[in-house]
Amino acid sequence: MRMPKRFFTLLELLAVICVIAIPANLMANDKEIVTKIESLGGKVTVKDGLATHLDFTECSKLDDASFQLIGQLSHLKHLTLYNKCLGLNDKTLVHLLKLKDLETLGTDAAQFTDEGLKQFTQLPNLRTASFFHTSFGNKDFTGVGFGHLKGCPKLDNLTVAGISMSDAGFAAIATITQLKTLSTWHTWQTEAGNAHIASMPNLQHLMLGQRLPGGDRKAASLSDFSIPTLAKMKSLKTLKIGEARFTAEALSALKALPKIEILTLYESQLSAMEINKLRESLPGVKIDWQAATEEDRKKLEMYLK
Image (cartoon, rainbow, N blue to C red; front, side, top):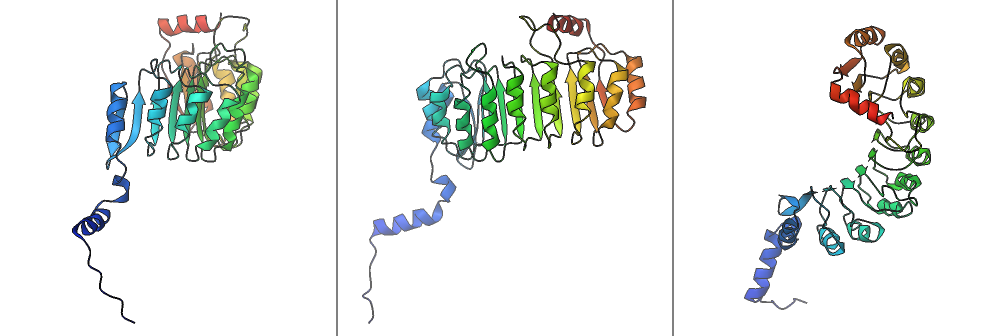
């Protein structure tokens, strides 16, 4: 049986044309949200009509409503929240969990609890995460919550710095076995804690600096004593260590690293003569080094008080 012909109204035809003509990724209009976020100081990068990058260099005034607004930019891939982001905590983090495309996140001074860090496992595409000054001075925050990040399947690059956490936090980080890059400095770690880092099976790039100065932390967290420990990291390709007193003799033990390509030494008191000696011990390894300035020497003394 032949179906009767159907005549489309003008409005129906226009609706069909609009659906065909507009790509799916342009259907979402972030313009109004972007305008509001820029008024808060955010710098937004828009690609193909969608906000993909958002950078805040000043976060001290961001509140719950601000994070709710950011969470509406559902196509964000990169987000940085730097300079006193005290308003970001377990509660407000919920708004950012809508960012399912997010690949890179940087935070400064966020007030998370150890249990609150578990929420990051709801970001399935997170690859790089940086935590600066997280919950600093909060006695209830130990850093063991970073262990929850092993539940982020794509996370392979982690930075934790300026955080009042001790070796227990690094033991937890060591369970994130998928990590390929780890950068850490200015914590309450001890040299014994470096053994946790050395146990990470897939780490290819490591930056390791000195502990925070002062308090009851008398011993260094990085010195010649740790070099044999680091020399056990057979997967390492690049190693950056500094803010410490090293000798060329101790550093020569790094020749045990079969894949090492680049060794960077910063803010140390090694002399040019010692570096030349080290280069002889590590043939084939590029050694990046600059002689310590007077300012570097003063900083080192401060770290090791």
